[in-house]
Length: 399
Ligand SMILES: NC(=O)C1=CN([C@@H]2O[C@H](COP(=O)(O)OP(=O)(O)OC[C@H]3O[C@@H](n4cnc5c(N)ncnc54)[C@H](OP(=O)(O)O)[C@@H]3O)[C@@H](O)[C@H]2O)C=CC1
Ligand SMILES: CC(=O)[C@@H](O)[C@H](O)COP(=O)(O)O
Ligand SMILES: [Mn+2]
Image 1: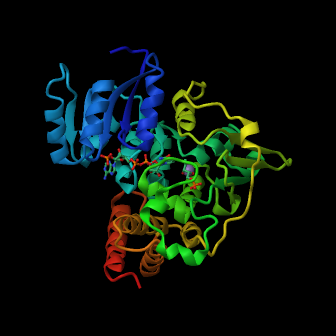
Image 2: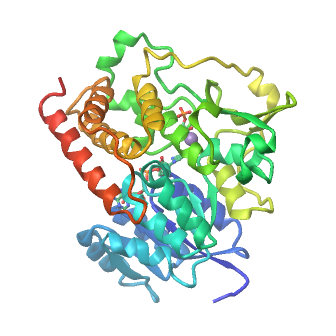
Image 3: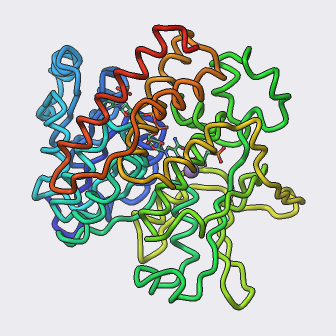
């Protein structure tokens, strides 16, 4: 082992963020050494990544997939130790030889391992926004108490982090910050007639105009629930209230968010829409390292547009504002119901506009409770209840 390199565990390595992370890591062999990779059940891609990066550990959460991976790698001279089950994610997030953890599992399934990395005091590169939505108070406290460095990977939050003053943790107002301007592309349906949305297909919803991403976040962008989750994510990351955050639809996705100061200045971070930029920023921080992303050509961009979100087209954004205002377990319910509804939409069991209906119905049935901060038990229990209510709503045909 080379002690001058940083050991990294990449959780969700077979997904969109995981692949982009490996692309950046591979450009800097003198800085990073891959200790562990994880996936749910994509054996083929994991086998390919293991051959290319020779990690010491590979986690397949699914046990049958873990067996298949062991067989697929049997001819390697030094195959990785293949682990399985959700607990293995926490193991590889807290190994002593790991310095950095990329949390890029989709959904609340990534929450326990993100928390394990924070508790182990790692540099936590957090793409898994759902972990903050569901357990923001617990995760932020774990990071602070254990000396973890939590760096946002979500493009907007990484941009905001780059535009904030170093003193932001003492309070945004005290640092002269008036507002955070959270940009949103508006997704594939930003110009669609609201009455046309009931008939849209998963393929149309996943065809994001600017970003190439996993299916769940692509649907979230299409409903603008992604922006709602990001609003809650920003409140936790930057210790602020929703009132200090304004969502701005910016269709080019060239400005990745902005910070407005009390002297009239607005600082923005710009770049081509490619997640390797925020990933390289967080991997290199406080230094800058190359990412492989093409430089922004402002003459080609030519124009930057801004508009407010259209509330009648995006009820999910309204529901996220409601959850943020209600606080307590409301964001847990919002997220769980959304995960159930998006999965049902992708399986063609409900329509696109039913997603918001399932979420609203679930929120109506499970009023917010104060979160028990002593551990994740209460959050997991509410998450389970919300999933059951949302599943029932899907089974009932939503209405
Ligand atoms: N993609 C993007 O550009 C952006 C993503 N994010 C956030 O990053 C996270 C990842 O998104 P993205 O990369 O698009 O997602 P993908 O769907 O592309 O990848 C998800 C990864 O998580 C693994 N996974 C899925 N379910 C489970 C589970 N139950 N347990 C363990 N691992 C699981 C998948 O494994 P397998 O391949 O085997 O299914 C895969 O490695 C999300 O929280 C998203 O909101 C934030 C900003 C931008
Ligand atoms: C790349 C990234 O960070 C995504 O979360 C992106 O923001 C999605 O685009 P929307 O602005 O359409 O949600
Ligand atoms: Mn984002």
